[in-house]
Image 1 (tube, rainbow, N blue to C red):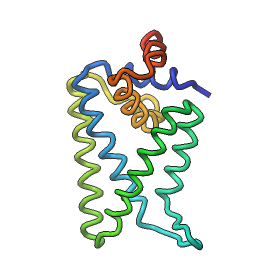
Image 2: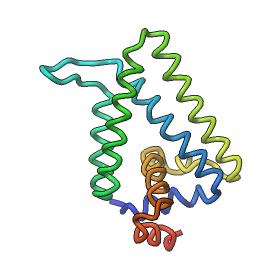
Image 3: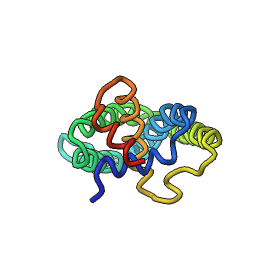
Length: 162
């Protein structure tokens, strides 16, 4: 299994332009909420739990992120949990509004992504490695953490690998 340094360095290689990173800081969370919203509608009630595809995807992502790095994984857990609440609220809207908001957010998020890659002058990372779709949210969180002055050791390891 690749390490967090491997994943972040591979993803960062496609995201060297600060404008591109900035567009991802906006676009990726919007896409995550859109996907969670779309996956929150089909639901299976089970006692006190409501099982949805969104819950399963988030649980799988959380396990993946925590296995890569406990601290960032726990932060991702909190952020994905908040995204589940937002996604469920959107999914509770009437069907037309749910689809309009979810698809609209998805499109807006991808517009931000592609504008960023225009600045970068390079295709998105997921084109060469589909894991880029899972690493994107972690990369955004790591970039924010790095910009706040935390995890200097991880930042240095990623930059050394570039």
